[in-house]
Amino acid sequence: MPLDPQVQNLLDQMAALNAPPMSTLTPDLVRMGTKMQREAFPVEPEPVAQVVNGAIPGPAGEIPIRIYTPAGSGPFPALVFFHGGGWVICDLDTHDSLCRSLCNGAGCVVVSVDYRLAPEHKFPAAPEDCYAATQWVAGHAAEINADPDSIAVGGDSAGGNLTAVVAQMARDQDGPALAFQLLIYPATDFTFDGPSLRENAEGYFLTSDDMDWFTNHYLNSNADRTNPLASPMQADDLSELPPALVITAEYDPLRDEGESYGKQLQEAGVPVTISRYDGMIHGFLSLEPMTDKGQQARAECAQALRAAFTR
Image (cartoon, rainbow, N blue to C red; front, side):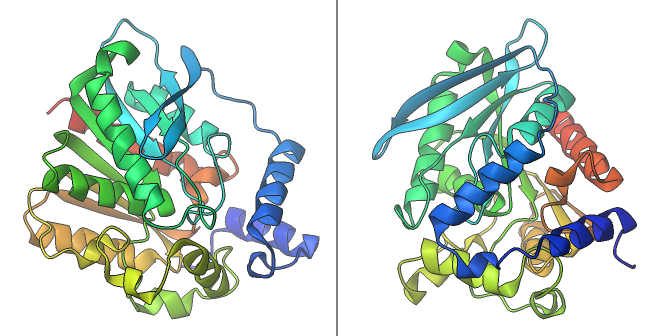
């Protein structure tokens, strides 16, 4: 279907700014620009019962986290959330709105993880931090009023990639038994070459040049492309992984690899729902409340988490 009119309006506004392509800038400049944009267009935070910043032990020092707790007495199910940003940009603040929405919508504690970013900390720093955070939540559930037997992992884009990787690590390393994995327009394979990479290479927010920029900052060499900790679709075995919801967007370069990973999970016997949002672009859940389908997708994610937690 055609590009959603609400998304087209946002893309037109971005184009009018005539900003230099992200792929021509340094990571520090992009991070600074992201922060300035957030401050210039603040979003009123959705209230939750409690929000607490903290830090937990990690493989290379402390990992900052932010814990969102819904109203009620608990213990609550928990979602360990990994933000997107191509493993290079974004942080706890960029995904604060989405985490608040999932906390209230799913009625769960959300632990947002500020894992180490590239290029200062290249692969596999991010998955190591995210897995350590997942282990910490399982081991310290009582401290955050969470149920250790009802833990999910989730994230968007690069965070979706890290979600898939952590789910595999937990299975392979006798880690926490995870109830669910929420994969929001995930990157799943650095060797993938599906049609959406060419069809949506330009003009839809995330470009092919951007993806190369992220990849070059994150990976150490081409050899990392086939490592399942970077490309979870490269894993030899996808069986016995947690049930999943895979959200994709029609005009997203990552559309086909996300859907392909979902189908391969299904073929391995994993219960998976693949939900494509027509007319949408990469990152559209972070455009809520500016897009109706962003709100719809957030509600679908929350409903899927609630259902998984009650199994």
